[in-house]
Image (cartoon, rainbow, N blue to C red; front, side, top):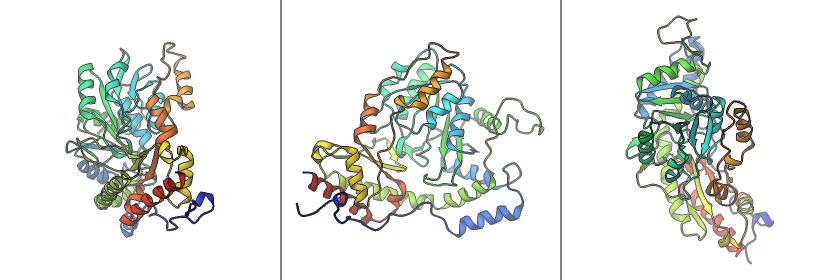
Length: 402
């Protein structure tokens, strides 16, 4: 065997780093200095958060935007706004960040996990109706990695059963379903600006909606239960102090200005990478639903088939690819097996003894432990040669494995 894998002591195929993240320039600096010199560092008296709320809502084709401290808070506020409370059930997916289920658990609600589609890793809409009970209050689809879930089916099911839909679009702002941007397709949508996201302020989040009443409730909940136009110490409901700072709003305004340029680069590279990887047996990029008219490409995911690599385990393959100079990760663990969910359910069982245990999710369990391989969004803002190096490194591993 002429070439030796880097993990076995050979020379790495690639020694050049991929693009770093975040990206910033003088625009972020100017925006931050404006906040500094204004002396108005909080949202209630400043202008930056309000300006970003308006700009981002317009970008997402939504009527309202309410900024919060992070994506988890956006989920929590949104679920509370549609009436989710103790003992209620929220249908969602096991293939997501733990914040999706934590938001429901923090309200005393029970996440009912429905398995994923093996081709897209989004929630399997064929299994949703079988999970609905008299206690179901909402469906919480996750637009995973930047690809929208099947919103046609989800909205139809919700309408039939009188359920609310809160979209977890934390990885998918800018993505489109049938030409409409995600987030405001359901009742409410949530977005994250955490450090890894496609625009970032280190932390931060936003809720988008076309519903005037829900927008007012979310505004009140994130602002300590106040009402718009009310007195400072007038609190009409229990709420949280989840207000975003002017510093974050300033950075996000600058980040949004270059969002389309970077989005186009990610999309171009992702499509090139997908096409090239299809030439390697055992490597299967996730399928894109034909109704997805724009993918956000927060994560590039492919399915790894070990029998095409000499039965090399997925985890060993990841180690080998990393050694070749290509950063990658296995991604999530299945949340139906997560101690975080199990601990949360124990607390809920103190007041709802019939709280159901997590459902088996064999597809999610398999992809989490054996198949999924992730590349982060910053890798997709590199060059076409960067994408070719990824393909060459995987092909090298396969030649060695066979």
